[in-house]
Image (tube, rainbow, N blue to C red; front, side):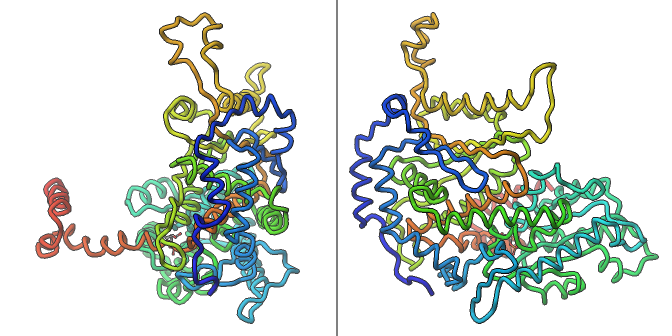
Length: 551
Ligand code: F6P
């Protein structure tokens, strides 16, 4: 185990200095930019292909210096190195945390508990790649001899959100015959609607579950198996049909076999890969089929480039470190409760949802890794929607509301779909909005500027924009597999940085267990068991009674 005792970030010297500085802190981005012509250049950094402009954050030299001191005093670098070396930094589950090993190059070596995990990773990757090539080429045939036209990934949480997000983001790279769909929710509408219009003869299911014990995934897998066998009719051999139409991804290969899936068609991974960190393991099989092994390898290389940056860049230019520390500044010292992620790229429309699990399942903790209570607030609420849709929905609150909402704006230079409206390049309209929004948020509009537009005095206050609303702008040349991998790794390490400063275990998720356990207990009451119903509290009982009366 690593560092059994947690530190108290509040007892550090840097914490005291930041707290003192936060009292009466009166940021003025207009003045800061006017007084320091170098500010944008000084606070813009590069990580891989990502161009990250931190200059519109509420950051002065004292904040920056003390945040870096805080990272040092809370041991972020040491824990990063421990994590990447395979130490058991997931203390409450007594596990190593090695998602960074999933993207190490083939010729690297990382021995953990006497085992070279890089060799293991590439052995599985090669199997996934070979399988994906068979599906893509049409060599893999279903029970009636037809090639696969639809891949349905069945999984939830980390076994769903990463693959869906990446598939949607990389659609322009997707195979033109094989479409991917995703079933996650136990709501039967999800399976029913996802399967609508599909031909069982050309459908391949990937059951993705780290534990292979997740109620939603196993229920949906059974529904899909029944749908498949019904659809193929009585003449097909059932075991052969399942073998040709079902593959699995899991760390629990014995349970895969119990489900009836041929172990030859199962791809493993390891307990040192957390669910929300597993897109780049075999959990990404649907994505490999969609974009092909070569492109998937580019995604892994993009992630590795950011890992290397996080591991080696000096703290003052280390982008994930800086972004994680800024989040600490906003949440813990400036009272921000949420953080918006606003992609100006429609293809990234599932990226905020993906980040919700990554950040909130990781850092939504009330105790530290040694079991003692946290001494500060922890993980903020991440949320977001693609721009410009968000502009016409919730930006009002970000611009003029009473809450501080730090926001990350993400855009790419090269459009995935270069459409024109007459002479107008539509992507440039999108980017004009991207640039305008962060400018408006940073610099606002004063009462005098509003008056100068001839505005009636009675509505001047309503039209004033205070400014000093913090944003980070992230740009990349294009949304390639590599750039997507870089974005994912960037946020993984931001999340890690925050967790270490707070002294929490960012790699467990005990908070999801109670609901799962109670759902098992409530189940019989929902189905009509009077004794089980009587055991419920008054509110839950009456809700179940309502359900039973209306069904
Ligand atoms: O319930 C939360 C969780 O354990 C996530 O951490 C995980 O990504 C998801 O469930 C799915 O778990 P599995 O891959 O084991 O089905």
